[in-house]
Length: 421
Image 1 (tube, helix red, strand yellow):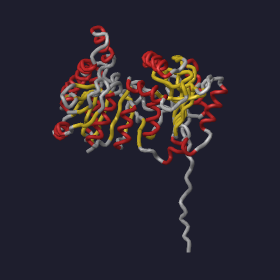
Image 2 (image 1 turned 30 degrees about the vertical axis):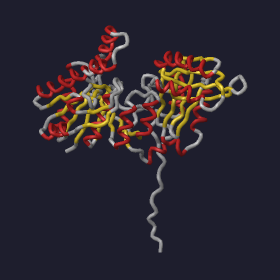
Image 3 (image 1 turned 60 degrees about the vertical axis):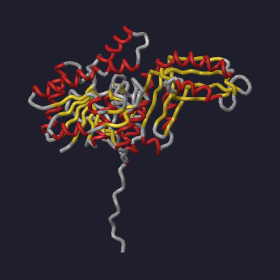
């Protein structure tokens, strides 16, 4: 008997008919001899509706009360799902995050899971029930409801799979799996059968929206096999697993992009020890995430220009803060640009092959796309470009690296079975 954790997103449970279809799917899996834990998101559009209501009441909503409000979305879906299972002749129980004791820290609206008490879940499983748990939420040591932020239901599912030592964690969504790039941009994008945790971490951090990055990190840490697949078909999806030797022969596994980027430059910063800390510490304290950083020689003697990227929805806040910091440290000015995007290629094969970055740059040059910033790691290369060229860059890179074709792996030599005397 296998223990399987399945997570269904908002589009999968967007109506009562869809909830019934999910219930039938889960029951079919249970009847094959599996124990089933099901994590559900709020119905599609519900979280945004609740946020809208909060904004009508309070200009800057209380974070604690936002968590109380937003956690109700998942409560609706798990109750309806349990009813659907019972109507079909099965047995199910719905549990909220505080009933399971998914304990988190006190960071409201973006809490992190500290511990999960699995005793109640195991008791219901042993009694033959489907256990359905509200995704996206937990509870503090003091009993306050918390939410995990956007994508938090993925994190809930993987954390439960790790705590329960589940055989697999299946993430059901409205796409067939992880693709070599966004199929909406590139029609010949190909579904990837297996991808490593590290590659998926890079893709998630660089803009791919199939999986939340925290869920992939948890899966890697605890060795949870992830299966990303469609709610609406029975097709095999994409397995996210430990890196396999054969993956190294694929130079590039995917191309991704992120338009939620903005670039900021602090001009003619005094070139002296401690200045960088004075700039980035207040930004960090404000909860603003900085990504790519480049430092160049300034136009005045003993100065430097510091350019970096932030999320576009943090841009205005970052600019206001940095103008204050600029004045304090004696920098000349702060300039910014929101009309940019980040395009990236990812592949574990880059570790052992040279020339991937230069090939990417040549492809961009051929399409007359100017590169503003570059960032690399062992398994990715990212470029900041003008936003208007995003789709062109993605298609050109996807074609140049032949990602539409099934990978041809290097044939390993046969073992030598010759007897030597």
